[in-house]
Figure 1: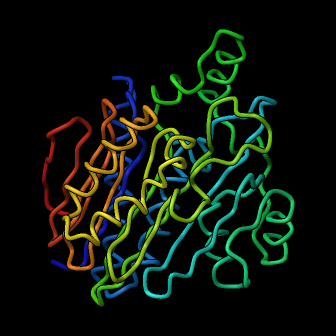
Figure 2: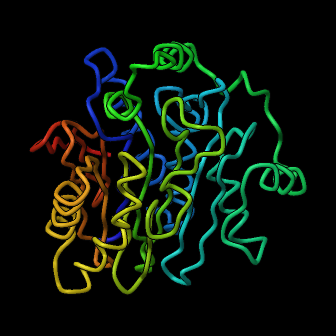
Length: 306
């Protein structure tokens, strides 16, 4: 059953003209991560590689395709967690970094802290030799169009957010049975300056524990935070539920309790995995036993050789 990697490209309603690029992107990221796992690489290396590929793809709300805050600026959040040690690293409201997920990993490996924010994260990036990129290199025409559209006082950014591709994430189990998760986002459309969502918060933007499994979520950050969705799902797994049932239970509770829509990818240490969502769609892909699985709508599980 091992190794396995699962990737998501955001939950919501993906417009027809962007559905294909959303599926192609998560498949590419999954393949890139699976090459690492198949050659004996770590789960952490695999999830960071998958998310880096998605951050470099302007089709997603992470890295280069990030949505803009109310001032028309990019502020990004990212998190990694290592199930072997429970070590974690995160950055929030970080600017002018091409790959926030790699900076989050540096926070985990090179500091005694778990999360650095805003200018402090930028100073740390410079100290680590991470190149600073021009802000305009992260801003797409599509993001600018959506920013302008949501400046209207009658606009509903939450509804609009769930109508487009969003947060990206990956979970993996390596040949040694170690699990890891990684999540990255540009946040909410037209968010207040300095707003931080679920992504960089342990237990909200992801969680990984070798004794239980790993989860990466996507959806409306505020509702995910209210129920600490990834940790809630892992709690159900601790009670003996499998990844699919536990994921469905967590999503159902979020919808019932706080009217939250979203999705998750989940693995356990034996290699069982799930990609579940209660939104209309979620682009996802998984690789296991040299087979690539992928889907966009409920009930889909297409397969092809990796």
